[in-house]
Length: 434
Length: 131
Image (tube, rainbow over all chains, first blue to last red; front, side, top):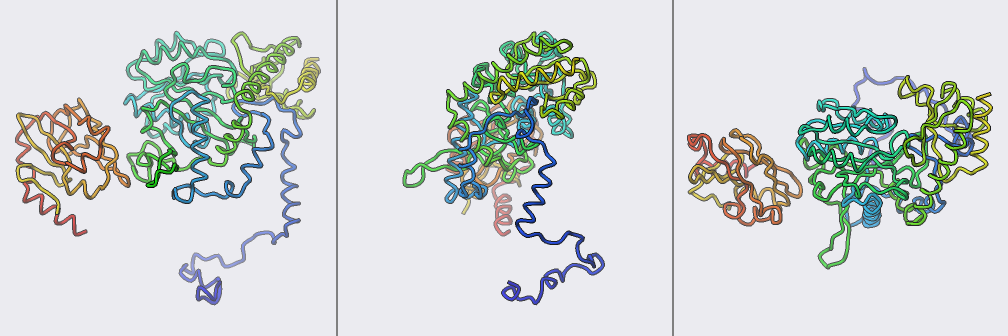
């Protein structure tokens, strides 16, 4: 290669770098490893993690231990998909583009919304971008966020809002859910959007129809964050007039992976399509009338609109979107409904069982889906620590989000949990109470 | 050769203006539309707003670029050409006629005197073409 390029050594390629800023010793790196040595080292490092293979997982708070059918990995591992690059050149990217078009269509069906984009990084950033969409569409400044939205997501919204000076007002709760009377007082002509999560961070269902009505009466948009796995049982956001609906696609065939990569689902009313960020794939016909797929409305994006663009995102989570599409196609309408039914039934079984254990009080006065909060007799962080020693991840310590919540545990139950696992969990809690 | 009607006034930013009874009709010139090529979307973002001369009042999207539309004169933006929503290419086909983009109720008719006539605009085009 050096010969071909016309230099005598690799050093010659760096000849343009001034002598006084050059590193004059070898890099301080360990020596090269053979493939078996590299595999052994990576295995050693990975063993420091405890995954859902080792722990029975009752932790949720935005990412869940749902079952991933083997076919998902089989399909996404095909090199045509796994190594495909960004589909900017439509002629050589029809496979990728069609897969994304199918994904968009599935998101629209699931959320009962008119248009969806090719995906965002995760729910948090999708929600933040939805906030900007609402401001651009309504030309109003303020956003109202329900206090029951995932605090990590609220943090990301605030980060995106920084520098744009977006007034953010948190909507107070009554118990674990939104106080609609407070929303009546807060929503006005300066409100661009009301943002609510349903089911909410605590697992409870919000009075979404009432919230929708109040938001729209004030001329604001309704932005909903909805767990896609809940849509096998609950009414989708389109049914209660959401203007923008987002969600975290991780429950749809994507591993937990300590926080990512995840999948931001984003959908909206058709008339807002020009304000949507991200890639959008469309179906069209070529000069000979054959069906084809292309990236559409690219003039929204920052590589064309530059400083006038609504967002700087110019990517999507293509492989994760494909995984979610394979999952949805494999599970089908009945499978999705069954996952929701089992998750909900099992969560309610466990909540009832925990309610029998002295000292532990499930906060289930408001209806919930697959997650619920439990008041604990000792700090939730100690419940978690004790559980880890017994091969159980008991839930999420809410004290991490608010010091006033240090005796509250967020417990999630998916279709993967068995009666034996849940009974063992209760035995573990009984042991703690003693 | 770009067409530059003698009865209109022009800006350095390639807008044309026709004043009629206190209302200025605004569009982009033949030179501008040919530089942009296929126009896919036109939006007047300042309808019912009072704008100052040289303020951006809308956007014109072509396949590869998005351009701002600037107010040649100050006033109240009273109308955007609704027909462009379904047929944005009209701006390419008939930039001085059916492809008009916005109407402004002029607040200071004296500002018209500060605009370029056809000959002066022709010079602007000449300079732009040799970049």
